[in-house]
Length: 356
Image 1 (cartoon, rainbow, N blue to C red):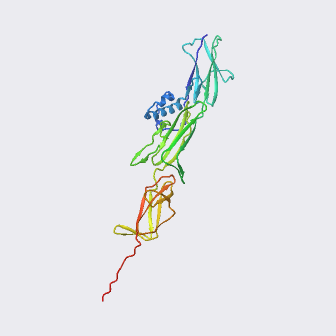
Image 2 (image 1 turned 90 degrees about the vertical axis):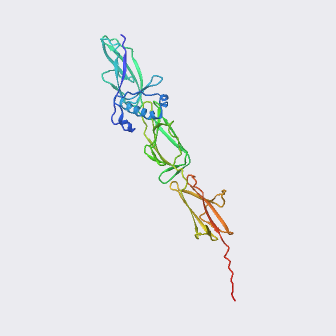
């Protein structure tokens, strides 16, 4: 007797699904899982990618996932039950029952859907019987239950400074992400950049949402705080834990620069005058990484020296200029400012006239 038995996978719904995207609440009932190849996924436009991932994740939890590789091996995320059914086209009135075994263990008659939920590799053997004792040739399936999500690794590369409460980078910091999966393999890496609004100049903008790592922003130049969420999922849609990355791009030099003299300069006829040996004191502040050093020069062409704590104006009479700037702990340089005063060491002249 020829008898064909179909292996029919029936996917079970799993409760307690944690929300991954806000759009997940809008999943359509009775959605059918159709997993795109990595090549197909890569061809999606950005605006379509997020919707595709939402649909894929919801469907995988609702219906389960079964993937077949090029060698005919099956992989599942373990959220399914399957039924063994005779092929109705080949069914005869004498059909009796189906027997199966898992991993060569004892054979048993099939009565209820079979669940393979524990992680591991399985061999499912099954065959059909009719009422006359004819037996179908045994068939086998190689099934691997993969419930372990990928491991995600990331690095940020660029000049950095660890402040008291946050990590700072210079503009141009680069993000590198990779993921590994030892069973079904990595399907996609997601990077979500800033899911909350933040100011960009005078406008507010929202983050980019979940994007494939290859298309997401990999270099960061704009001043401000960044929050990244990195995840990966494998080919049976096991989703890794979210890795949160926070850092601050400091694109601004020190913002406060002041120069004062002791004694204080005095203005006459539009000029600042100072006395010999007047001390010039420089001060700078930086609200992010802090001040690394203050530099000064006595010429406009450079020749910068580290500010020693005070500078003395002394020498011959004439105009003196001190150019100064500050550098923060990431190497950002402030604008150059100038302190100038007219040193006048010529005493006033006077004549005495005596009247007879």
